[in-house]
Amino acid sequence: MRNILVIGAGKSCSYLTDYLQKKSTAEKLHITIADISLENAQSSARNHANSTALQFDVFNEVQRRDEIKKADIVVSMLPARFHVEVAKDCLHYKKHMVTASYISPEMKALNDEAVKKGLVFMNEIGVDPGIDHMSAMEVIDKISNLGAKMILFESFTGG
Image 1: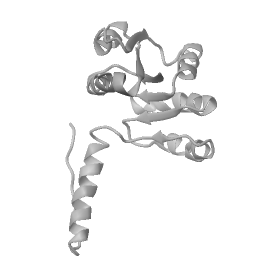
Image 2 (image 1 turned 45 degrees about the vertical axis):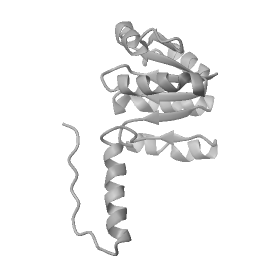
Image 3 (image 1 turned 90 degrees about the vertical axis):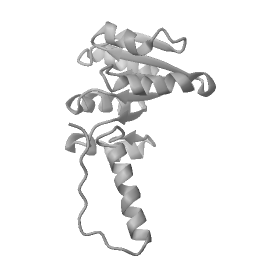
Image 4 (image 1 turned 180 degrees about the vertical axis):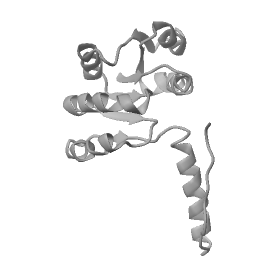
């Protein structure tokens, strides 16, 4: 069974955990949902057979490293400013990482080491950023394939 550690069980997390839980049996996934609030983690875990809720403090270095060590993939749903320490631990333990946030200069600085270790650090995989980038590229590609030239593109997503 592959282990996915989802750190942060805020509002956006429920869509992710719902998707992972639906795929968990066929894909042989176990999802650990970790949050400072055990109640939030339990709400996202929904008593699903392939999910575990965990009270988790990202600032507790020992706990953070122990949980990352057990995971195959780490998904950080935390605010962007908290990704770097998680990413450094993922590098240390050779774990793939996904975030929904824009790439900060600090995260970008870790890219070469991730590539060297054969790891995937995938950022900007949310609604904004993420789906907005993919839908923008779809429009840009269509225009380009028609031989047209784009003069201006504006995108409005999120709040």
